[in-house]
Length: 261
Ligand code: MF3
Ligand code: CO
Image 1 (cartoon, rainbow, N blue to C red):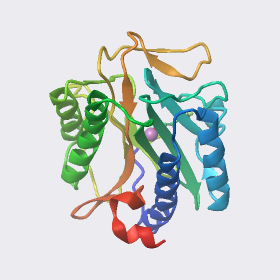
Image 2 (spheres, rainbow, N blue to C red; image 1 turned 45 degrees about the vertical axis):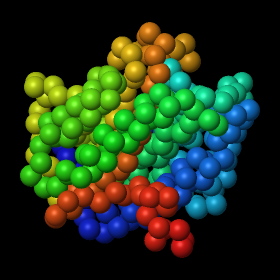
Image 3 (cartoon, rainbow, N blue to C red; image 1 turned 90 degrees about the horizontal axis):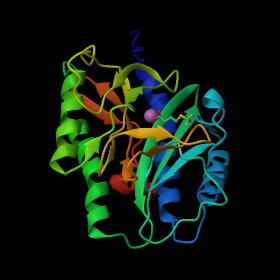
């Protein structure tokens, strides 16, 4: 395992890219409505990547054919945007995107309800946010990765959800995927890294409301739940700082000072 520690300057540069990614995801969220296709979301994203002069990290990554991932209902991750996939009222959608800016990657995902969603689905989406923000509140130098995984697993389980074992968070920055893997459940056999200042991590609770078994569809990208249960994902890139952590992919809606940009 080789964990790449980022300099202060690299973290500043990642914050620039991350802020753009946050703006893009907020803008996409605001336009998700019943009747549109997942391709419509990608087209809007492409315009925004261009407008902000950044590259989509995912396009071409291991041959991935699109600039973002849009995963609907039982789709867990890596949904390829399609002009035939229409969103309808009550659906739940995860939009996952990466920005490459100043030679550094940032990675973030939002979970969005289409139109009016059931209170059950609202609660389901909130579980992921709760897990992510609890992690953000505990990360600082000296914390072990197992503590991060424990917070994610227990928060999801308390909400009646199952963490997916086969998909993980990861280091991010000079590459889209760097060491270490950040598991969404506690594996006593996993190497237990101690977090240090300058590490940059993509934390991404990925979970279902049924079994956590998954399979890959025939398009060789889209991952779905085996039992058809609902799945969601939220993600932020974080930097471990001297006395806590910083959200690199902050979204304007979360912090009023960002509205002024
Ligand atoms: N966002 C994904 C992750 O968090 C990466 C997508 S890989 C791609 O790891 F190939 F779909 F782009
Ligand atoms: Co990621």
